[in-house]
Every structure is written in structure tokens, then in C-alpha cells.
Amino acid sequence: MKNIKLSSFNIALLGVVLFLFSACEPSNETQVQISVQSSAAGPFFPGPNSLMADYEVNLAALKGLENVSPERIKEIKINSISLNLNEADSINFDSFSSASLQIVGSNTGMQTIAIKNPISSKTRELALQVSDEVKIVDYFKSEKFSLVLDLDFIDESYDEEIGAMIVMDLTIKYN
Amino acid sequence: MKKVILSALVSLMLVSVSYAQNSEEANRLIGVWEPSHGKAKVKIDKIGDKFYGRIVWLKTAKNPETGEPRVDKNNPDESLRNTPLRGYRILKDFVYAGEDEWSEGTIYDPENGNTYSCSIKMTDENTLDIRGYIGVSALGRTDIWKRLKMPSKK
Image (tube, rainbow over all chains, first blue to last red; front, side, top):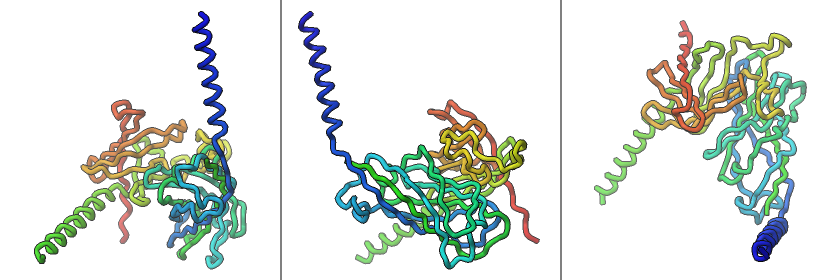
């Protein structure tokens, strides 16, 4: 009986030691801002139209992540996403009723990461409402991913090219 | 040496022709399709190498209670429930598998907020068998979608 008790105690002790080891694992975080230029050529018609952007993942180019390899990234939180229409385009956000932003990779499926509906902005800048649940770590572990920005045109057709800068503010946790 | 170069060029040409044919076959999925219930029309497009379908028309476009455009009220992610249904991508990430079949995709049902694994089989140029399933293909349901022909310009 004594031996059994000792054995249970040992197991519990081992559990505590393992827990302490995992808790002591170094965890760091850094805040980065990523800007990606999206664009699409007209003509655009009433309803949803898509602007596309490709992003080459290069952690070494992001301040604070210069020496972090992709496999060390554990979590990415999207703090905010904003859109800025190109100044050269003769269009404001009051031309659109809603916007949604998707992320997709060659080996990772498409997910919606932010939306805005309805759009009340009459300027060239728009802050999107970020998804509470989206997980984007896997996209940063591949060489590149794409962003698909859907803008819902209200009524008139528009023939010119449209460009929008997508600015993502992220907190990246790594060990 | 000439023979080797010639052989390499012929091989390269054959690969290019095969790729172009495969791409052309795959792109037959692009178009506007109507599910059997007739309550929506879905436009399938290509993004990168994959195919996606989004709602471009709804029989009931507005919420009868509010008069506002219908939104994705059943989305499991509460923060996205205000996404308009018109424009919503319900088919995602399909890859052409050859022999008139597109696989590895998902289909979203806005009526209940569920996403299912999905495969698409083109039975003729204007008909798709869309099979949504959970886990294995045998545990699923097939719906028949018809291609909508664009009116010809006179």
C-alpha cells in the first residue's frame, strides 16, 4: 500500500515539474504593422467586386521578428485592419455599401478576417470590424498568402482601376 | 546533342499543352449556377488555382421584418453575423481533380451556419452534382445545380 501511495505521489510530482517546465518556456510578443496594396481593374458593376493583393511572408523584414523562424510563431492577434483608397482614384467609400476581407493561402483555405456593414464613411479611409475567432498563424508559416477585398458597389458602374492599401496591425506571439 | 535539345523542347511543349488543356477543362466550372431550390444564384470564379462561388442573387434579398438586406445571421462567428448574404462565398477552395470533378472544397449553408466538405461533379456542360458531406462522402446529400446562360447580345 505504501508503495502505491509513493508511486502516485511520484506521478503527481512529475506532473507538477512538467507543468513548471512548460510555464517557463520563453514566450515573447511583438506588435507589427503590415501594409499590402490591393487592386483591380474596371469596369465594376453594382454588387460585390473583388480587389486582390499578394503578400510574401518575410519575417526577417518585420521589426522585432528579424531572428524569428516561422515555426516559432504560436499566435497572431489582429488588433485592427484599415483600408485606404488610393488618392489617384476618383472614388470614396460612400460608393460602397459594405466591405469584407478574406485571407487565403495555397495550402490554407479561405477565411473572412474582417467586415464592415454598413459603410458610413464618406472619406477614403475605413476601419474594418475584425473577426473575434479567426486564426491566421498558418498563413504566416507559408511563403505567401493572398488577401481578397470585396467591395459592394451601390449602384453606378465605375470604369477605372481601383486600388486600396490594406493596413493590418498585429500582435505576434512566439517562443 | 541536337537530339537531346530537340527531345527536351518537345517534352516541354507537351507539358505546356497538357497544362493548358487541364486548365481549360478546370475553368468550365466558371459561370453562374442555380441550386435546385431556386432561392439563389451562385457565381463561380477562380482565385489563384482554386475555385470559389458566391451568391450574386437572392429570391428574398431583404429581411421581411426589417426591410434591410439579408445578412449571415447564423454565422458561428458572432462578430461576422452582419456580413451581407449577397456576395457571400458559400463555395470555397475547390481544386480540379480531373475527370470533370472538383474536390477539397467546402460548402456553407447560411440557413443553419454549418460548413460541410464538398465535391463537385460536372455531369454535362450545364449540370453540376454538388455533394456536401461530413467526414466521408457516403454520408452526405447531393444537390443538382443548373448553369444559367447569359442572354446573348443582339
